[in-house]
Length: 365
Image 1 (spheres, rainbow, N blue to C red):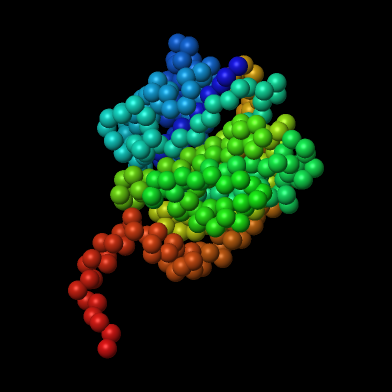
Image 2 (cartoon, rainbow, N blue to C red):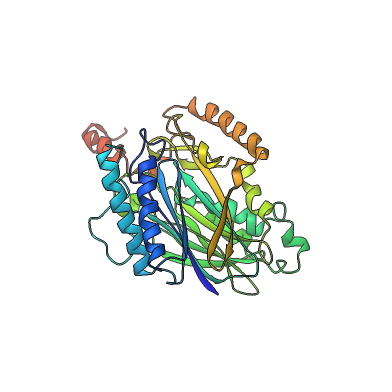
């Protein structure tokens, strides 16, 4: 059967500060999605959180970009914002950049990753969710999963993956996209996705079958709002096993706590720490950035699970490395490379300070 898997997230209020999601907010979201499932709009759903971000995981047969599904998500975020305001949570409704639903949540603040596919005999799904980071955070992991034989040995020894994968890359500043075939175009691919603040991997496809293998959210809040309103806190869906990388190959990139944009006020580089859902509670300098991972099997669109994939103790070293990297970077304070470069500070208070001091700059002799 053809299934659409939609993961839609929004920061609609933090508890306490930016560190956690309140149980009442999660309960309200569960209530809304349970009603939609009872009415037949959804096949199944799972409500969870990553830090202060509300995560809606939904299966249905309404196809991608469905107005009904996006309206359900938007209405749920609005209702949960009311709960957040009642509790006086921090930044209530932060990711909702408009008061009006326009037929899609895209461009309105929430992050969206969706894919439609024919459910396999054994359909393994891994969903990644991140907090205190930007939408380009998935570039390196997706490259390693689908193009790096040192990470994914299946690219070398599995005949159904040996032909490689196609990467769809979005230029979020110019609103353009391009595709690259791996392995023969990986050098060209890396030129662009090595700059994750602008070029982001939106989707990955199997070269031979054309089937979608991964999809991510590429929404940039600052570009939509024209100012800093919070970090993007992206989501990503990866299909696993069979003609796709195995679960262990999908998770392996996160043994490296890669440096990502985000952390305090969205203005710093920090290590992406893989944690269990219960530990996605960033408090040190509002961080460091966190990534969580839930695994499911699909059965007729039903979500069998979840399994908390980063609860595995074998990620303890990555967590310790992330803490050590955090120590090192924090000692840099307001200096680069801990603080983001100037071109990435354009949506913070930096332009206001520059305008205030503009008349004090004089020409050099």
